[in-house]
Image: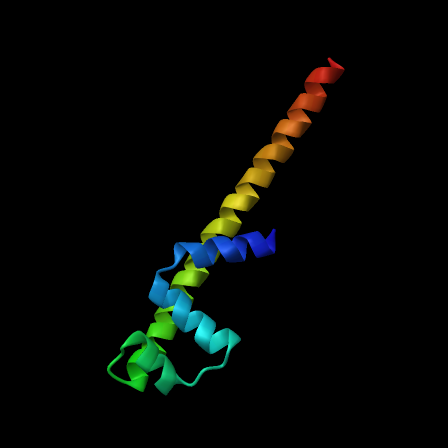
Length: 88
């Protein structure tokens, strides 16, 4: 389930967000190279792009986790209600 959530978050991000996240976190590409890949004006701009992408990914992940928790909670409540009605 965590892998599915990670894929969903990556799909929801923009192309540039995915690029900066993957280049830096998975491949440890230096910021000057990331700046070139994203056509950023400076290393500082590339660092800011990473920070913004991470914040967006975090928000998407939190929403996804909250939605999953609600779905599990609803399923659990429905299951308990169903068991109770069968006993009657």
